[in-house]
Length: 274
Image (cartoon, rainbow, N blue to C red; front, side, top):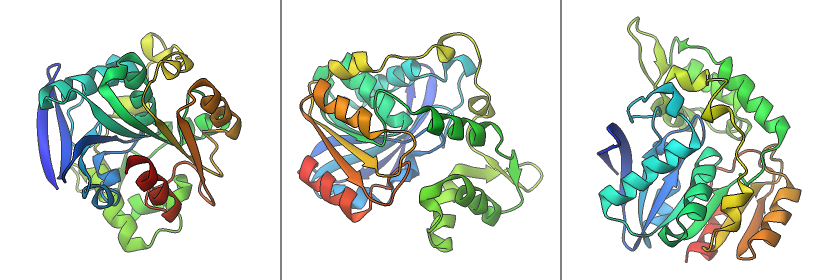
């Protein structure tokens, strides 16, 4: 695993390069995630893919940008800049939650640039219950923590899929989300402006994601947590009708979002990606 830094649109963006052989594949995390969210998955893919993972602007080790630019259109523009800088004419994408929205928009707007698309518990419609849950924990999160164990406690409380994770494994997962603060506490790496988005302008206007979804020509794999409050079964059924190269696999006993290393997730990814 190697860190790469690229300057795109005047902003310094960070990627993890897991190397591997084969065609390029880029992973994109969710709203509050970071590039390391795919550390566990990457070794399963590198035997056949050149795997990289992006820190979306304002998260992880990517630079912070203007608050008004924290929106999907800007994230898509950043991703195009990353592909162009790396010299990648076409890639496959794995997008979790927000990362899936970014991936859908790129695949629909620039269909020739996406070979295969994996959407992890996200579709063109987001269920209001799940959206309200995410908004609540996003905007009420503590600004700092006394130690890493407190960060882990916060994740257990607000991220259902992590509640059964062994403590040592969870500490290794959450350490990438925080950094030392000036007073010795741990603070978020994520830009505070993301937790308090503007109420007007581009970021406040709802997107009709069915428009780009209908324009996708790449095969699509949708992984849905069977207990997800973000992606409904009805939405996945419509996705299959709108884009007939869509395959849907439900991951039992999982909410939003699958870790992608569940046995069912890995099997679906191996079948889809080859």
